[in-house]
Image (tube, rainbow, N blue to C red; front, side, top):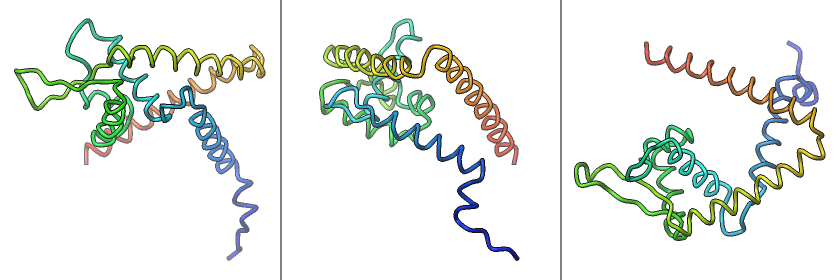
Length: 165
């Protein structure tokens, strides 16, 4: 049996792809759009706003919906929402018809913080895209979109197979 060296393992295309994606994730998440918000809090606040933009009107976004959108456990979502709540950026509420259902909405301060942090974050991404150039940026967007769709389809197929068992 041939012994595989670490160098041979790390030179494989799969490992290089994995490493590139992990590096990309690490550096994108390290961009702090606001010093008072951790990257996970910014992402959650953004997810809340995205969910609310798809609603006509209502008490807010349910924890379960945020869990599905962010691919986090309900307890993980609750923990991040609690941190946002402690900072005065969101409020939790219930409705009389079902007191077990918890809804989350941004406060006025939360709306303002979200707008400002998004403006800062997307301005930084625009600067980075400027260094890449328009053609490479468009190609990156296309490739990331294709990759995301492939992963989404494969994951949903795997989930259906696991449910069938």
